[in-house]
Length: 293
Image (cartoon, rainbow, N blue to C red; front, side, top):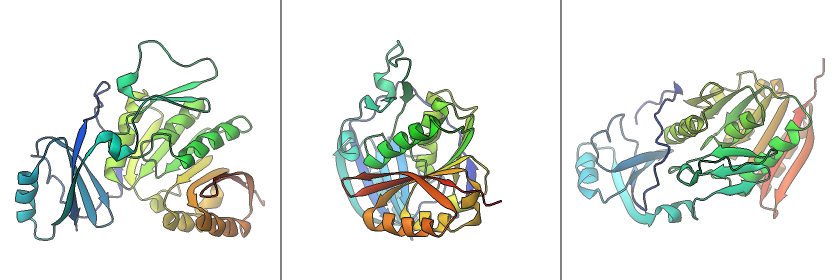
């Protein structure tokens, strides 16, 4: 298994007007490819790594390349391959979306004129192959939590753990946050997030890092956002660094997970300001730490 560097700053050169590929050809592999393994691939779109598995995305069938590459890597095994449209991969068409006061616009639909009114915030977002377009209930709740917090608190810095497409970090800066650190352990997600930072012209305010949430919890910020796997989140809450944040948003929790998190929070000097419950399935917490000194 290749060694992961855990604190890599991401850079890229986004193509603002690129329309997503209509068809996707996906190769599901057991094992992680070494760095540079796909550099010579034609029509390659990206590699999504999850635990000890890889998903290679191409815009055209690439059986020959994948077979040849696997033949040189004894620890890599092809498990399956899929063909689907870009819209099928995301579950719906990627189009302009209004969520509360945010207008989330894919770059290929961006008009020359400004679409936002005086009390709205425009976000240019290209999800690429990464989930996090604003349609998921937990993302909606996090955006609402940001709005709730901003109208009653002064937030100058945030730490966004499990940033995905970078949507929440971008939304926070659009609201007036001066600086944000956006972190994702998935390299493809981190690259996608930085592309969206560039599309919104926020390179000077948002730093995107490829790294582990656990290793970046000590970065001082007014607000910590964690829309991340429960197994990671429960460990973050148990760290001393958790109580250094003035505010926190915890999301992406199913009912049983939310109950466990609520029990954890009851044992800490924190106050829950608001909770969201989407049809009894997805749960989000907005809270503040209590200064005991």
